[in-house]
Image 1 (cartoon, rainbow, N blue to C red):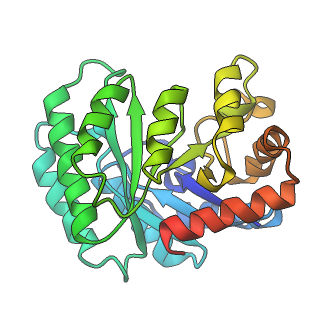
Image 2: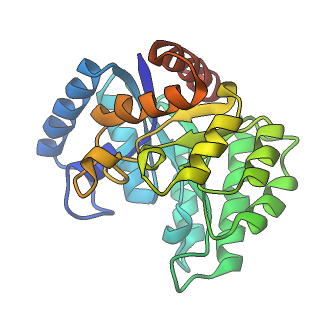
Length: 268
């Protein structure tokens, strides 16, 4: 059995981002979940990126027994009015049990997508870290072209952080060594199968299995066999096999340990 620790079911079933799900969308999500179960993916963490998508994440978690929510503001969704949006995230977190919220995320820093306001992203990231600390929740962290800056922010809080994962890990080995040393996890997705991704495969081979969790980031980043198509939780076992081969373990052992890791991090 596998846990998909980072999925966007809400984005898989509608064409426009930042719009609320409609009744027909829930039926489509039901079908995706059932297909995933048949493939051995029995639990899904659905990740928020904005206020509407965080609300969608909560709605899905409340509707489906094996789906859990995270809520947060993605760095690329931190608009000049982000503080008002943050108030809505806080409102959701205040009812974290009822809303099945298991983490604050997807939060972090993204200096790749331009234009960006670095200070605004840092301010929003810190506010959301402090929210996670207040409610004793782990973090789902996004980082792109901002590795050093991200580590500097995290260093202020690392002794207090309950737990964290670096989503869709794409950093260097020294970055991996630092965050694993802090007790964080690294999330590995379909790109582990991409032919030119030898550096990531080397990192995954080096990082202890006890610090790896599996994620699809569906509908994004499908494994090599399905590049150009929409990703889905059903494809998770395909790239899980690549990781098992790198670690020299059976697929069953990889599933067992990564499920233990996900259960510990997200208190499943």
